[in-house]
Image 1 (cartoon, protein in one colour):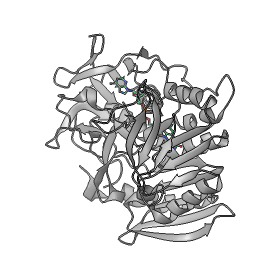
Image 2 (tube, protein in one colour; image 1 turned 180 degrees about the horizontal axis):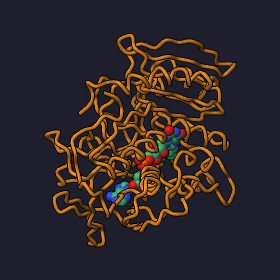
Image 3 (tube, rainbow, N blue to C red; image 1 turned 180 degrees about the vertical axis):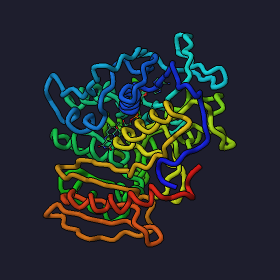
Image 4 (cartoon, rainbow, N blue to C red; image 1 turned 135 degrees about the vertical axis):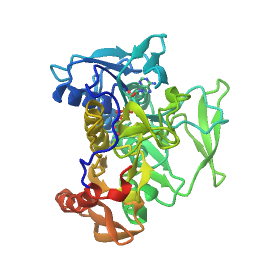
Length: 419
Ligand SMILES: Cc1cc2nc3c(=O)[nH]c(=O)nc-3n(C[C@H](O)[C@H](O)[C@H](O)COP(=O)(O)OP(=O)(O)OC[C@H]3O[C@@H](n4cnc5c(N)ncnc54)[C@H](O)[C@@H]3O)c2cc1C
């Protein structure tokens, strides 16, 4: 069996006429483009809770946050000429009835569909429940509006504390440092990014942060947020008992899939929308929800590189590639394609271009091919039970193509993971 193997039929034989996409961002737009490119001529409605047309998020924590101009660089995603979509922006979907095949919007409007693509992505994780949020001074970064709010704040501050040294926290810390702020980066784990890319790459990234003048505190958590008389943030107590005075903190604690509006729909929701390898949404018993697919950060899909475990990946390329497959499977439910994309990710930290393919987090062994901090070069291959599952490079991007080729083949020929 190969990646275009057939699976059970869903939807109608004549093809859908009314398609709805919920989530007007990267995956939603790419899915819409694919639908039109594949010849879909029916009604296409795109629902988004943000007031903006689709824009790109990766530049938010890089060029947009670093820029000091009055006009930050725009990150709009280009709209194709013949998209012919009905945009419902600034309005969240609040419910889904897969039996009646309707999506309910916050204004009470109901959109009937005969094919639905879920692309509501994820939201920034906030403080743990029960923690009292200061009235001012605590930021997260997921959207354009979040970024402008943080950028405004940094314009008038000398000091920033970032909690969480993952890719996003690292980029925010690097951007603030590049703007000349004193930055403290707090990480609960032993190294930044350790769970994602292992201890060696984590130590390399830690060195990059420290060389750039960032105060990196590892093995450290925040135990208390202090406020002034008006309830504004004034400082933090750390797990070693010390106190940090600051009035500005960014929480970079990861993302939570935006599944709230799907509660009660009967779709299996557990850290994302559970899908099969055709990106079709599933019921909790594993059966397919008719005419509903998902793509992007919201979709939790079984992954051969992780031993068939369902994963939601917060990666740009994954959103683009899943959107195309999910859109085609919505149009042609009787001949669905497997999703076989090789995960890939990039991040820019202090001028170092970090590039990764596959799933380094799924590895049980890391093979360090090159570790050159002054030369800004790093190459690591990641294996699980002896088989390649991922690779990471800095300053050696050309090496990734060979790793990618080796990773692609098992993804296309892993019949044991077909649902
Ligand atoms: C600051 C930042 C930097 C990043 N940098 C990188 C990078 O360097 N490299 C990389 O590979 N990836 C990066 N990513 C990740 C990448 O941007 C995401 O993987 C990608 O945006 C996922 O696209 P998506 O369409 O699935 O979800 P999203 O982009 O999250 O879009 C989902 C959309 O749905 C909307 N929505 C949510 N709920 C509802 C609802 N109920 N009704 C209607 N609309 C709703 C959301 O508001 C949002 O507009 C970054 C992400 C961020 C936030």
